[in-house]
Image (cartoon, rainbow, N blue to C red):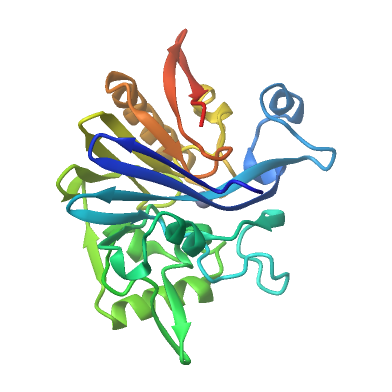
Length: 287
Ligand SMILES: [Zn+2]
């Protein structure tokens, strides 16, 4: 992958999407209870019954704050077959998060807040790193903001419990964690909003700028077809909760004509949702 960093100015905010890579996700896990033929009408499937997804995180530069939305893999190597972190195969990595941040002039020390959408491996294992044999926060001056319900429930059974527990222990030891509940403004213009289902305390981020509203959606949606089929959901999620979160938030996205950034769409992920008959459809923006 050549291009892995995308930036755009929205009013006073510079929003940057950084891709850490992509890989092949087995259809049987990516879309539970959807017949393969029906999937193929909506989703590109390879001859091994897999779909391509990418791994992305977001940086928001404001005059008064420097926010990272999810930590990504960071220094963790998700391609190590001895330590599978996600059920995605043949992962191809980009130069990565820190190279992406450096390319826009952001050093780890500059980050003031890390907002964690949820504590699945691909979103949280980059929270810390090992320095001189000791695990420390990757962003030494940042507050790490997580929903209480997420912190209490993670790691869920299907994740690499050791890798996620290592993040929790090191962040707690460094006294870097702010647990929140309900919709909450984190800094002026940036709100953290519960959107459970992908995990018990999954949350999305709303950025209000002088040039429109931008949401980072984390894993509220994983691929464009889910905006049309609100009940298309990966295995091992709380289906009822995820559908309810989608139904609750989609009218808000439409009413606000918001820009949307899901974590796993094709890079650079940005687009909008439009009403379509009784439902909705995803419209990718040209990067
Ligand atoms: Zn994810």
